[in-house]
Length: 259
Image (cartoon, rainbow, N blue to C red):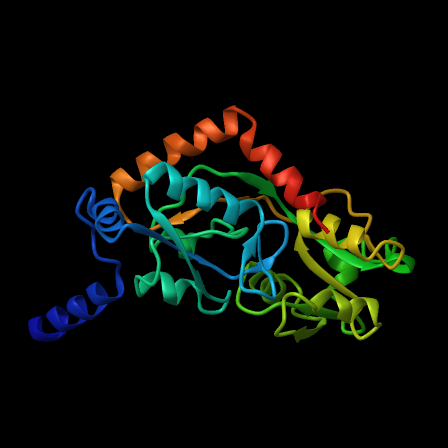
């Protein structure tokens, strides 16, 4: 390989990597603009839900509003989707992203996450009559099992990596994906445990958590920040106070109780 080709390949690969940020650059931008731009999908209760009037509710969106208050700036929610989240992040469309976002290596390669706010794991949800049927990956990963999943996030990645033998339907609307199971158009879905419990409550008597011995994964949810050491330090210090005081848990509990 010639030196010219080696140099070209190096420059091409370098373009794919996130550019280092000057310390304080993101914080300076937030203060100069007078606003905190927060990306969120708005379709993941109890963390983030966009209501018909355009308002956002949920534990993470409420926390983002409190962080904006701590910074002394206004908040601006920037809609995104799970499929476009990483692309929008890399494009600088927002200063931080919230809404039940799982720490994943591909995401962490683009920029830092705060301290974790929730530890969870993937579990299956099915019709209550089948709660003792889908109790392991082996019972789910079969050609006669029809699984449904929302597109673009960790649920789809998990299904494609671990459940390739099953029939898989990608349902485009995260807000109605569980209705596919309730209506009998799918047998089960593997998703975050907090969502399994929430949807079992919403669809009481119809959908139930499957009886698995333990979650299939260990996942941590946090807030995804634009690269800036000072912004990360500030946000982690504020977040630690919220967690230690119990304010975060109260916020999450209130969001879970909201119908």
